[in-house]
Image (cartoon, rainbow, N blue to C red; front, side, top):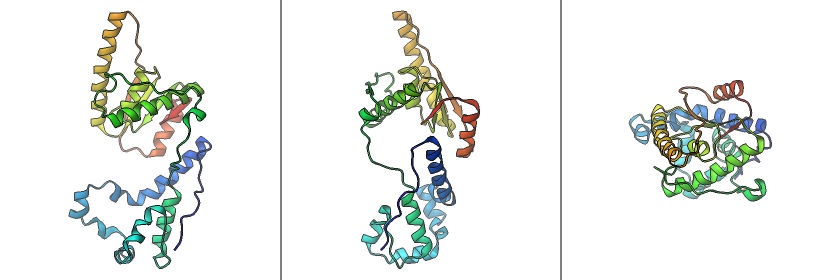
Length: 237
């Protein structure tokens, strides 16, 4: 039995973090056909046939307790070398899960409850996540005096819109799904109407420094090049 090697990467600097992310992307590329497949396609297209036959023959006869140890990076000596290398490399690339004390890392960090307008469409779990993450990003952005925050993989824009409306940051939201962009922009319009009504009622001006950028079929490094060429002091989410 072998255990996973120690992780050779770190997040000490932005360069170190990008190297780690690139290593993960390079590792996953050969398996995108499985990652992006729907469960139904796995059966209709017989995707298991694309998996190394030696792996299948080996794992088919493994005790269940050995299979359950795979996510922990534990491999067996009699496994094919390629399978052992796959599991050990995979485990070595896992991002750290140790929870930091945010009050020590980010002095003055404070979570603010979202208004019902900004929280529209969120369940309680999503609302909690956005409240905490937006507070963290806001603190980091303020500490480095960033000009623009780029939310890569913005989805329906929950986080990006809170950063823009509640914290008044300039935000560019990027997503590869055009449907997400439509939902995001429609949601933004509803929120803007609310703040416009507040402006008329109370006489103060609300700025909305938010933009949605729809990027499709661009590789990770191409996106980072776009940001580095056109934006300065970018905080990447």
